[in-house]
Each structure stands twice: as C-alpha cells, then as structure tokens.
Image (cartoon, rainbow, N blue to C red):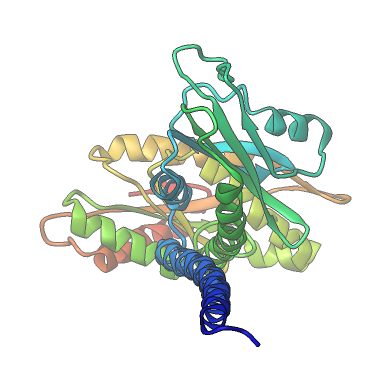
Length: 352
C-alpha cells in the first residue's frame, strides 16, 4: 500500500505531466493561430493591393504602381517589372540603371523557355554595375493559367535578406497581379475600340468631338478644322465594288494621317468624309500649303487592290475661327461650306 507521501508524489508527477502536455498543446495551437493570422494578414494585404491597382485600371502608370508596391511591401532595395511583348520580356519600370544581371530574362528572350521562380543569395555582388550592391534576389514570373504575362525581379543589398517567406508572399501576389494586368489590358482594348473607327483606324466622330472640346476648354486658341471628302466615291464603289471602296478609304486615311503632325487630330466623320483638327496653326497659308500637299499626294497615288488599280482625288474645306465664330460647331459648319465650294469649283482642290 502506497504511503501518503508516495501518493502525493505520484499526483504531483501526473499533474506536471498533464501541465507539460497542456502547455505543448497550447503552444501548438498558438503557433497555428499565429500562422493563420499571418495568412489572414497576407490575404488582407493582397486584397488591398488588388483594390488599389484596379483603381488605376486603364492607366499607363499601372506598372509603376506595381513596382512601388513591391518596394514598399517587401522592403527591397530594387524592383523591376517586365511585361511580355511579341513573345519577349521587355523592361517596363525599374529603379536600377543596369539590369544586365537579370539572367532569367536573357535566357527567356533567347530560348523562349518556361520561366521558373528562383531565389539567389550571394556574398559576392551580383550586379554588373559595380556602383550598386546586390546580394539577394528573387525572380518571380507572372502567369495567368499557362500564359506568361511578365516577371518581377526584387533585390536587396543585404545578403540573405530574401527568403522562402518572401517567395510565398510574392507567389500569392503574382497570381493577383496577373489578373490585374489582364483586366488592365482588356479595359484598354475595350476603351480603344470605343474610340477608333473599325475600318480606317482613325478616331470615330464622337471621340473626335470629346477630345477636341476638352482641348478647347484647357487651351484657348484659334480653331482650325478641315473637312475632307473623297471625290466621286459612289462612282468608285459602283465601278469597282464596295471592297475596293473600303480599301480606298483606308489608304486615303493612312496618307492623311502620315502627313499630319503628331498633335493634329484626325477622325472619320461619316461615310467617306474625314475631319481634321490642326493644333496651334495661326497662318491660313501654312494650313493651305500643308493640306494642298496632302491632296496632291493622294492624287498621284495609284491605289492597287487585287487586280484593280485606280487613282482617286479629294476635296477639302478649311474652317478657321474668328471673333464671331468661336465654337467647334460653327467652325465645322464653315469648313463644310468651303468643302461644298471645292466640289462646285470642280473638285480635287482645297478651299478656305
């Protein structure tokens, strides 16, 4: 029979064993809770980042936003973002002058290999630019399903700064960034389609009015509008068919666009009519000479389509604002009147 002391010692040992076991279970549970908290924080962070980037949907600055996020969240010294264009990785933004040490990018561009996640830590400087110290690096491709959209390279000047934990975060981020980049691309395509005439590739009429009216609000200047009409276009369609007519319209649009300045705005006004807004042109003779040159180029161009070859001409009317006529509608009306004069005078001419 156990003595009272023995019973006490046994109870004490049992208690201590249970206490250790309970403490072990609590520690494991706390570790799991901490791990879940980390995952929850990561997911919250990713959701916030996605919302932030999607606010910039359609913006040309979206890649710079991604780069800034990488630097801010990971605390890295350098970040570079590449996007795929024509099956090559093209550097879009970086706070590095020299990215020649990004070997996975070179290998992909030379061999079109599948990109893999890689982490690199070295005591030696891995930068080819010796004025910059880089000792830790992660290369993270951005995939959407099996399609490569781009890659992120994050780097630090401290050895072993980047770890597998950073890879976990970057992997989760890259999945969301892929969706954001794809959404941005689709948004821009839809936006462009709403602005561009499908046949000629010029702006459409509604977008022309919106962009010119915005310019006029921001910058008070003389308004110059040119109305251009292809002469005898119905006869061209009737003689050679509508396919040739469409091709003529595309070629004429191309010639006009190539011979205007970058700031000038050109749109398909309707049918075979084209409208041009010329920025900051104060001398009517300069406008006339430029447009008459375009008219002569069109006249001398043989337009070939399949087995059809033909020349076409255009008539142009110039409208310039005055003290009494300052609205866009009034200047278009003036340009229209001069276009009709050009037609009445025998076509293939510029009237102002």
